[in-house]
Length: 287
Image (cartoon, rainbow, N blue to C red; front, top):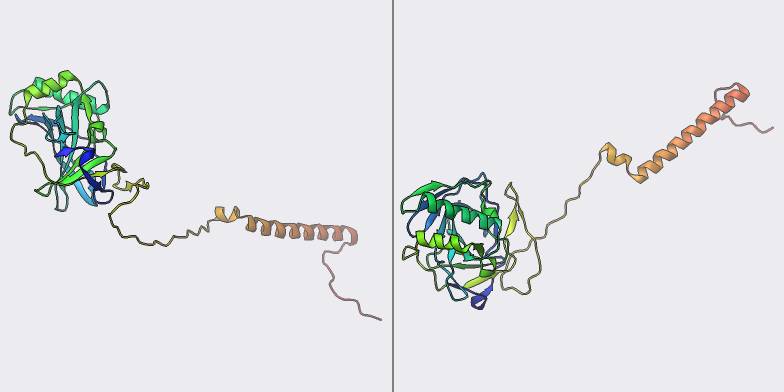
């Protein structure tokens, strides 16, 4: 599959919705000769939502060269994150190109640490080693930018990031990776299916699995979705604090208080002047 803007068949804003919140994880790397395999822990909630289905990471592969073409050519390496659905259905692979470059990011640091550790402690096929990375999480690796998507002949869903979002690693790290592994024929090169783009990129999940989606206009789309009218919920707050802050209630209370004060003053003045403590409301008869 050639990942290129020239191959796009359309947009998939609704058909390839992707959100993630990958948990922190321990990591064990195994040299499989044709790729490096990395383990990843499962969290309390699904790490990924793809098309409303929950997924967890099953395996991470580091291959060299890339299995995809980018603008017509393969690149130095590629990170492939395999996901397994929680309730059955399509498998999901998230793929990120890796190139030699000078930019330094958190993803750069993580990948260079993995490559360096494997080259020293698991350089031969069949070797394994623990990777020590503080707060290791795929959240630091997977971009939150537009991505490409397709489904291959085996009904596997692919999310692939373009070269603009490739992870830079040093030239020496890339050479070290290439000397340890060679993709050979162990991984089938995907080809043939239609390529789509999600211009909005992934949405963000919170720790409890809720999703925050930034809805922006993206022009015309052929996708269809159901729209439901939701009646707004009116919240009535009758707490003492809320009542006492109501300006109408305050006006009424101030009026009542004023009347009470006037009556009290009247009684006091009447008592001082006449010695009476009550008001005579009887009417005088006409003579």
